[in-house]
Image 1 (cartoon, rainbow, N blue to C red):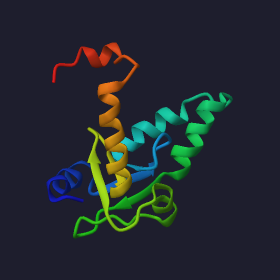
Image 2: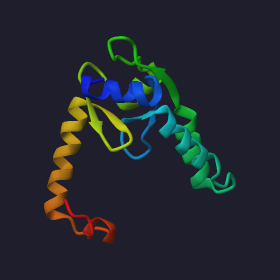
Image 3: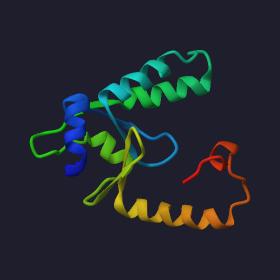
Length: 135
């Protein structure tokens, strides 16, 4: 974990985090424990007879793995999670507000290039919520 995030994670959650898979991309999601607990409670409240909701519950909650930052700010990634995201030697940690994404560096570069290309040639309009943002 980069130094600039360690202190905040120590203050917010004593270095306790939860990792799970992203259901749309081959990357991992890393949440401070309190943020994950909110999400987990919302996921658990979804209707279990809805097949799409059940799929999300199984994937996100089923892969959720607790971890703790060690004294050097490292996190042990479980083999199942490493395999899912195709993590090898070099990874990218991408901040996403209240969570991080963990990507294999090569896969991140590939997808980033695709997204940048889509931005200028996309046929799908931006949602109104995004249009109203002032950056």
